[in-house]
Length: 457
Ligand SMILES: Nc1nc2c(ncn2[C@@H]2O[C@H](COP(=O)(O)OP(=O)(O)OP(=O)(O)O)[C@@H](O)[C@H]2O)c(=O)[nH]1
Ligand SMILES: [Mg+2]
Image (cartoon, rainbow, N blue to C red; front, side):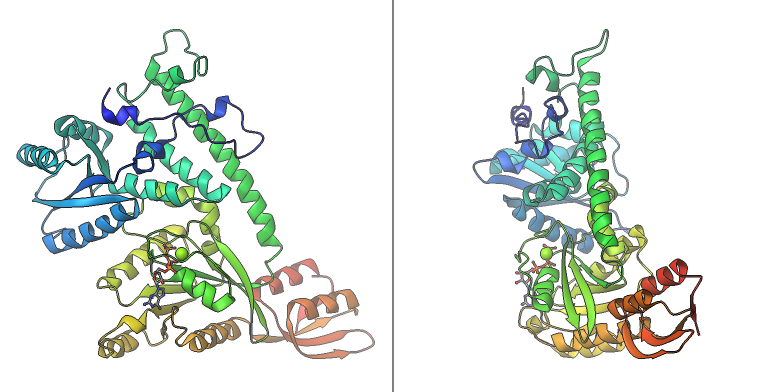
């Protein structure tokens, strides 16, 4: 057994819900392979590969800086960064033979336990590299998954992370890795002629199916909650990780979401209601985005990210003090596109202006983004301007209209009062006229529900 396999400890957490049986929990929790179980700080080498002209060396440098932050967030110590230029990636080992030998040497010299690749490795590449280096080899995706596993607090977040981890793991289950069921005696009993690895795959697949149905249940609950709020305007804070979304939510709403100088401090969405000049507005903060965020992970975070998909307005928060904030903007836009939320009314919010030494750069940005707001969430600078920008967009969305209820229906009129902003109301013998502003969703719903008596004048 290699060191890695000994780190596979059985999953023995308390059941998170009562319907969960022993058998369904019978598998090895992947996150426990990694940094969580390490008592001493894990020493790691980062490996980046440039492929000019599609990825130049300076880009690889930037990516490795970010990978270093990720590794540190996961509790590891980065002792060296290694680079290679390659025009073609090797199917078997990703990097060339010479570089692999060099890496093995450096691992030995520097007492390194793990090598982290910035690029996704195929299961075969990962396995071959582990053999060649005689060390644990992981990639960016699996590092991100580890951080997610460490930071997941709520039932929903835990379930989502575990699902993503198992889906990552499934194609990587090899004969070397396995013997899950033996650890559980009796569980996942072998069928006739079924090999150990098939049994293990089946355990993981069963667990995946169970997690998916659990997530579907969580989705339904959240949907019911959202339905109860559908008449309220929803503003979702999105952005790259660590840009200050939670700080801004706290500042806007008085919430006390955990704020940390860490990547992926927030994994779930927090929703708070605030009155913005007479409009009831729900602000939500959610999981941050990052370059190369695995699509699988985005998919398993569907129930958290629905908050973004269903928002009326998006606040795209940017850390303007970050040297690569423009690239981060692109990553966020791409992720929004993946979610199908790219066409929502969006306000660009440039945060951390207090860290800008040269305010001249702001002038250029103001030209490029004329509707953007420049704030410092931590210092509370220009928060009023941001509220105004939200309000203006709201007003634009909630244009004032005149409605007629014929014959008069006082219950319906009361609903207008509850859900809209009434500007004027007139009672006539055979009808009621109301001039008001309604959120678009609400208007649609009322018109449909009361088609027999309600119309727009
Ligand atoms: N100087 C400065 N620091 C800020 C500002 N806003 C947030 N920060 C800091 O940036 C770090 C990240 O803030 P968070 O609010 O946790 O960021 P986030 O976008 O929610 O991050 P994740 O949830 O990890 O994706 C913390 O250390 C904050 O104190 C700001 O306006 N100025
Ligand atoms: Mg946060």
